[in-house]
Length: 378
Ligand SMILES: CC(C)(COP(=O)(O)OP(=O)(O)OC[C@H]1O[C@@H](n2cnc3c(N)ncnc32)[C@H](O)[C@@H]1OP(=O)(O)O)[C@@H](O)C(=O)NCCC(=O)NCCS
Image 1 (cartoon, rainbow, N blue to C red):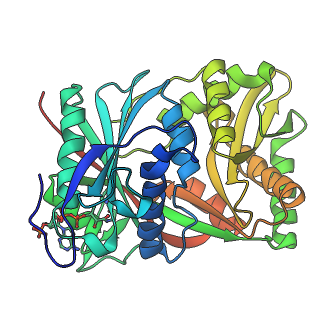
Image 2: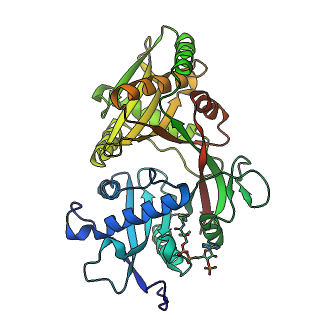
């Protein structure tokens, strides 16, 4: 797995990343190095590092192994000291094996510092990751690539098998994962909403949504927690999310959530130093949570937030509840976190309905996120 030395790239070896108790521990070098690589690679792709995992995200993510077994490996310079420094990490691999559902599936992701590419580091990490997944009996392997632009149809654009959405075929990610036998199943549009949203537009959308929702629905807003008595129902919304969002032919199957898992999810976000804002719509006559929308944001990066899941239960669709929970969440964000300048979100290119809501709110295209799959063995 090693390479002869060259002037630009030292020799390197692949080791499993040690898991430190905290980021001040001497063992934290690998997670700190992963965060450096994340920042370099995402800045290369997007021109900014809002989307890079920080070391505390890596640590809290690895602490949380209850529903998914996770492993991390790093490529380290062989001439590094006995306890390497973050800068000695040239690339990294993340492997995820879901354990409470989707046990046929394994995910892997590799990043290499731009200055150390095309020397086999990516391939060596990849082989390590595929081996872990195949040894664990996983038969569907999934990975993703990120892109700063989504190209128009034509030469140089690779179209997803869904028929909606493209990636630049010559970006390093697509070239690499295609050479490993992965197929481009689906592309999500990455969009950004600059804040504040035009108040007139927001008032109009809020009024339309409230009128369509009628007196039978009321909203609740929760910050940094989900009240115990609502957790089971929020779990149902997450379960539906796993099957109702379009997936193309990606072989993700139902991922059941319950009250306990909602609690674990909140704990992991808080351990990462993230805040959370959730608006739900309750159908008052039945006491059912019919819709939800989730924003999350790193507390120490006040300029941006991520728009995460939004879902309306099938039996409650057609009453603009999706728009309602999004608008209320935006209203609350403006009050509770006025430093937020932009919101990132991702939606399947074939998800016309959700894209239409986001376009109405003022989101504009900012790139793409691609899902790739390979079937192995049985
Ligand atoms: C994709 C990535 C991990 C490759 O890392 P790397 O160390 O350069 O990979 P390797 O040296 O093992 O390259 C293996 C093969 O991939 C293909 N490839 C990788 N980058 C390429 C590029 N820029 N142009 C053409 N082919 C490329 C080639 O077939 C290459 O073999 P070759 O160098 O013998 O021609 C790196 O470019 C990266 O971090 N990109 C951003 C993150 C990403 O997209 N990760 C992949 C999905 S998780």
